[in-house]
Image 1: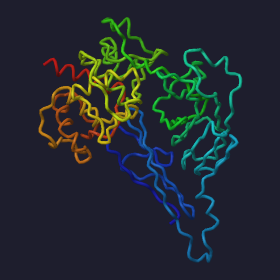
Image 2: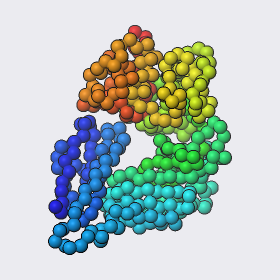
Image 3: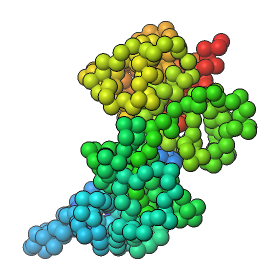
Image 4: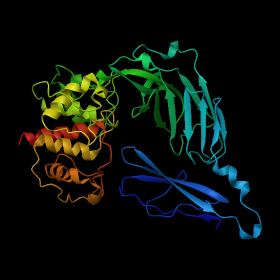
Length: 411
């Protein structure tokens, strides 16, 4: 067989799909994909309505024709990762590659990130003065990462940066930013995964990148929020957003704040510590809470310690079976439902059927909570009657659920 087609379907009718970088309708066959002898990676990228993407990779092996009398040794090189450590890489179309500049930057390119030859260069920016405003302190060098074409990648690449922990105080965290050449400003990528003194993000484009030390207090609420939502709540990235009204109400109520660069980042995911702070800002309990006994309590930022302690005392948060809280992990929809239900004093019988099409995927410990928040109108499904328990909620979705919780409490 020298070619094949792929027929895939998406659960959410609002999602779109690309097969090997070519837009393909759900439930319909893709364009014919030519197969070389050996392994042929085929990527399926599903993009949700909120812009989130998930990539599925299928490898199809085409055997060598039996009449050739030879092994497929000529294709062995197509199965290896093309690597470079000097900051430059030329990668044949469809291949997997990795390029680094010493230990400072590493870029991992998945198969079929692009359907053309890819040439990457990484250069350290020496003249940084005109790029810095003084708002945040650099925790790494600034790097300009370029490729030989302007189009974005079909599949996101992973960028890993080394940073200097000594450049941060106890109330700061590392975060990757890219430089917007048009607006001449730095934009926080968000969602970075930290491993020691390295932080990784995914991106579909190249430009200038750097790691900055960011104040954790940027997530703290305003102390004396104004009730004038129209005059005080002005963010550069919420106009026309589906949650614009809710964002203004939540900010004015002291539930959440924006960032120092006048953005709210409504589609950024929420960590467990951040949601605990938002939840306590909503409930406004009295007292300092109970002493924290989680084995990773030291990892909970000072800006979130009181909120987590209050939530534990109220029985809203219990942590994991291994006695950790995992403050920096992105909160799942199932975990959010459990916290909201606990805050409302759920009374639904345990392990009851939720009524969602993906009920089997909802953990037993969360089913009662999911049922409760659904019936109370606090949280709803994502489409096609799916709850998506392991999905991650955005800042906009989190504050909307919190406002719904307030409305339920007032009944």
